[in-house]
Structure formats: C-alpha cells, structure tokens
Picture 1 (cartoon, helix red, strand yellow):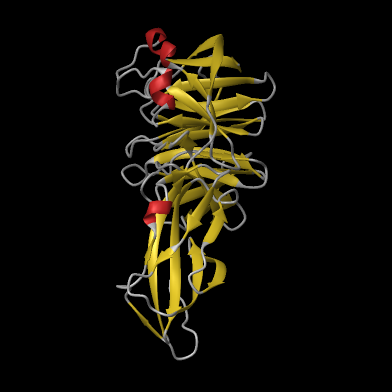
Picture 2: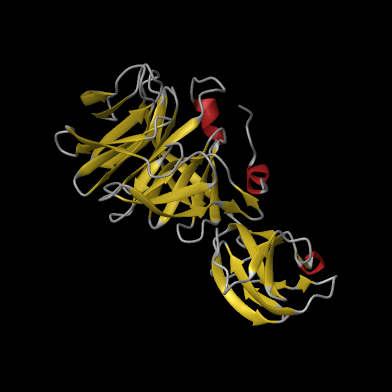
Amino acid sequence: MKKHNLLSFILLGTLFSNCGDTKKRENTIFNFDTSKISAQYQPQETVDLAILNPKSKQVDSIVYYVNDAKVKTVKGLEKLSFELKDQKLGYQNIKALVYFEGENAETTTRIEVVSNVTPKLLKYKIVNTYPHDTASFTEGLEFYKDTLYESTGQKENSYFRKYDYKTGKIFQQIDLEKGKYFGEGITFINGKLFQLTWQEKTGFIYDANTLKLEKTFAYTKDIEGWGMTNDGKYIYQSDGTEKIWKMDPETQKMVDYINVYSGSAKIKSVNELELINGKFYANIWQKDAIAVVNPESGAVEGIIDMSGLRKLIKATTEDVLNGIAYNPKTKTIFVTGKNWDKMFEISVSE
C-alpha cells in the first residue's frame, strides 16, 4: 500500500399506473433539455428541469419524479425548478412522465449531488502505545464497560475477544466456525453484542455480558458486512462502498442510508466505524487516514492523516489501518491495523 498524503485523499475526490385508458410507450419523442442540467450539484443549489418536444406534440401535463418519488405535476411543458437541499448526497434519478394526445411516455436523466464541505485537516497526538497481537486481522474495535473488544477476519481464524489492551491478556474469546465465516465489525447496544460477517450475509447477536450466542440473522439488503457502530438507538454499518446503512437492532432491518462524499468525490470502501461526539470516524480501506463524517448528510468534515504511524510499526503494505475505538472514560481514541504489532491511544484536535 502506498502512503497517501492528505491533499490527495481529500481530492479523491417502477412502475407507475396509467391514468384512465391512456397507453404508455417507450419514449422516442421527449427528452430532458440537458443543456440546462449539470452533471453535479451542491445541496444548496436548484436543478432546472425542462422537456424538449421536437415533434410538437400536444402535451397535457408532465409528472416529475426524483428517485421514484413524485415531486410535482405541471401543466403542458411548464418547467420545474427543484431544490436539492433535502436530497441525499449521491446520484439522483430524475424521470418525467409526459401525457400527450391520449398517450404517455417517459424520459429520464441523472444528476449527482456532492458535498459543499471542505474537510478540515485534523491533528493527532499519541498518548500511549500498547502491544497488539500480530495474528489479529482486525475488523472491529470497541469498548464496553471499560474493556476493549476486538473482532477479526479470515475464514480460518475469525473471532472476537475481550482483553486487557495494556498487557494483551485475553479474558474471553469466541471463535466463528472455521472455513465458513469471515468475521467483520462488532458493536454493543441494548445489552447485546452484534457481529457482522463479510460475504456470508449473516450476523450474530450475543448476550453482552456472557457472550453467549442468542440469535443469527440474515442481512435484509444484498450487501457485504464491513464496519459497525451505534448511537444507542440504531446500528450503523458499512458495506465496502460509499454507503453507511442504518439498521433497527430490534428487527435487524435496514431502514435508511447515507452516501459518504468528500467534496465532489464519493468515498468508496468505507470500513471500520466509530461514532464519536456525534460524528462517524471511518477507516477507508487501503488509506492511511481516518475520515470524520457527518452522520446526517454523509459529508466528510475532517481528515486525520495517520500515515505517520507506519514508521512506528512492523507491518507489510498489505497490513492496512483498521480499527477505531473510543474510550469514554479517558476520552481518547484507540487505533490499530490488520496484523499490526502495536495499538495507539491518540487524542485528536484541530
């Protein structure tokens, strides 16, 4: 893995029912006026939508949809100015259903809403350095009742354990079935420990105190399992793309998501997550940096360049930074990487 400087990281930068007896057909007549549409917009902007009618058909009305949600019905070829302030960051699929001369036809286009936030360069200071098991292919890291828990991957060696981070002494370890499951992120919520698997689309729920397995569950979306955190009410998990999903821990159903953007670029491969003081701290796979993400919008608000840790560890370029745990008692952050020989306790500032 190459070392990435901060600037390069920042710059990464339906079916609808017909009305009455009208016929619906493939559109060969109408199109969006793309001369008035940009490829990218920021949330404070407005997109102006207009339909071209080169065959001079008699248009009765147009119904506009954004991401299959009806926005407005207009008369004739009336234009529509649509504010983007309430849209998610990411691609917006826009459709116009045009009613004309007893028929209807649809036309589509797409725009991308990007972040209008310039990420800040955040600083970190190493408070302490602790040993880390080089056999641990770190996927998740979290404190629960002043004790550190770590989950690991690899199909032949996936487990999670609670241990003394100062000495490395293991208090308890739960192994996943060898050859079947590749362990991923963990999080504690409502007296339970949730654990993801990578491509098996299976999650596990344990009693937080005894670590006894209580339930397995299947993902409700066709996604991979990567990182995990929670806000006390919902679980948030990454899937290796730019998405962070919101899950109801009671039903294990995905109820929403955000897309992570740094400026005009979506940030793919969001990995381990930790919610700290109302912001997501996210490892980005194969990047020596942590992104600080607004959980409402998905905008990257800060970047912590962690590349300086490389010279302090014994690790190959394949041993990527992964693992973020906030200790509320010390108000410090613990970070490590896959198969690293050290774990670092850090403080972060502007």
